[in-house]
Length: 182
Ligand SMILES: Cc1cc2nc3c(=O)[nH]c(=O)nc-3n(C[C@H](O)[C@H](O)[C@H](O)COP(=O)(O)OP(=O)(O)OC[C@H]3O[C@@H](n4cnc5c(N)ncnc54)[C@H](O)[C@@H]3O)c2cc1C
Image (cartoon, rainbow, N blue to C red; front, top):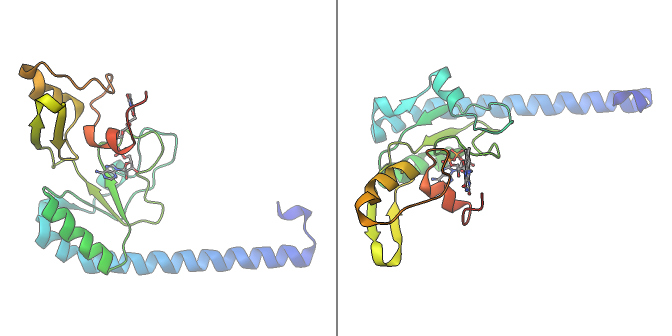
């Protein structure tokens, strides 16, 4: 792309790219320092076992089923209830850290990629079915409840949640996207 430019414009363009690289790298350094500062707060909120810096875990949470390349977060947390999500989110907000929710990584749009790093909230431990109103065909679930779990729960009621037959997709994210269309 640079070949079509005059030498002075080429130099300007290279200089701009270098400046951009430098600012991205200083953003990354600042964010990594912020992550180091918040780890003990995260651990005191949801316990040592529910905070992971492991490379394999981070990579697993940086990719879904789309073609987009893996963009791992800096850290993955596994909250177990709304209160923990709320407390963790407050810490992230106070330290200006991006938050990326993660259901099961079956999305087809690359939405779980941590394009600016940050903290992945894996919601797999939040799998309670909170309320069922059979007569209204209405159920309230936590975000980790999958289609299979819900259907096992509904088995004796005569009801059935038919969406996404081929996989164990989370009920919550299917409806976040609007009414199921596939
Ligand atoms: C085989 C297959 C069949 C499918 N069938 C259907 C279908 O019948 N109908 C249909 O509509 N779709 C279907 N889909 C797409 C489906 O909607 C997504 O796979 C599903 O919604 C993604 O859920 P997830 O929890 O794995 O999300 P992830 O891939 O983990 O995340 C997807 C996006 O949602 C965000 N997110 C995740 N959890 C939350 C949360 N609790 N709060 C806020 N944001 C959150 C993430 O940050 C990300 O941006 C299908 C996909 C597959 C692979």
